[in-house]
Image 1 (tube, rainbow, N blue to C red):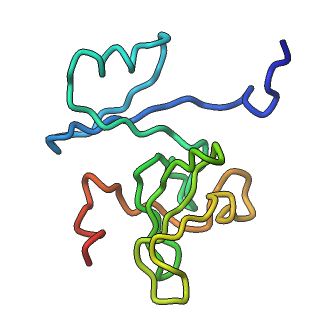
Image 2: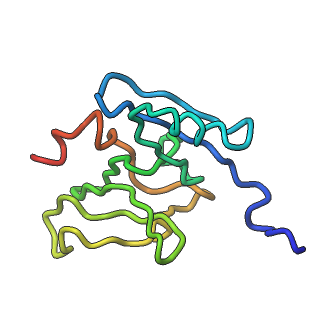
Length: 132
């Protein structure tokens, strides 16, 4: 069996948010199935996976984070049909169409695995940003 060279250095991290909105947890899958066992015990958690990228300030980017570049606000989403992460346009003052999703690699700057914009929160802690 051939090992995936692109995945060798991948970091598998997860973050969880209690659905009740009480707090955020950092989860690392040190033992196979640990995260999924926790879910099967009925705890109301929203799981967010690390994308492997950081924003311009070095903040790790997770699924469901809110990302700002210029006047545009995006939500980090999983594009399952393409097996990659994307940025879904939430707010814009430009010609971009709200709801359109772009592959996240379009936003990588000059530094390796670092984007040009910044994380400004996530959809659970900062839902007010979605409504403004």
